[in-house]
Length: 170
Image (cartoon, rainbow, N blue to C red; front, top):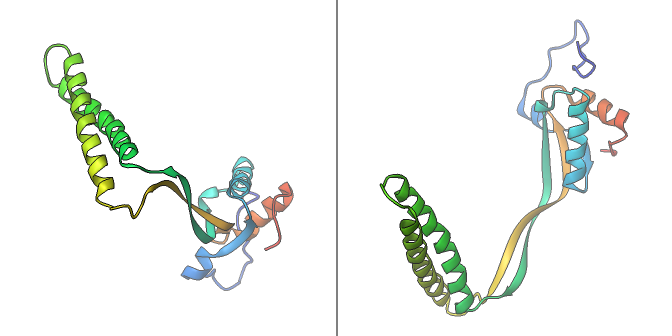
């Protein structure tokens, strides 16, 4: 029996296996995902069976960071760049199944992809009719990250985090 095995007392009622008991035994809470990840990594380094743990983000927020103004020209440029990469990929795939030099297929694929990407980027932005003239990046963040233990490993995980000084009061 390892140091992190759940403790059982003889002649006691069998352990609960209902969904609530198995899924939501909060071991520790952290404000930052990196801290929660560090705590699980510490348990892993100490030999804890981490396959019984989850990191659960709570109070989720969608953050959309505006990165700049989006014009039809910028949309066409972004489409051309995306199309260029797709055209290179198609040229490479066709080159695998052809005999002879690949350079021509790669160049033609890149050129056709860039032209069509620019056309679709321009038309796609023009179709919004000015209702979204900005570029942005979206991120999903959580206000709190809980480490949750399943299958009766909550007490052992708490003990392991207490030993490492990583557990906050839950």
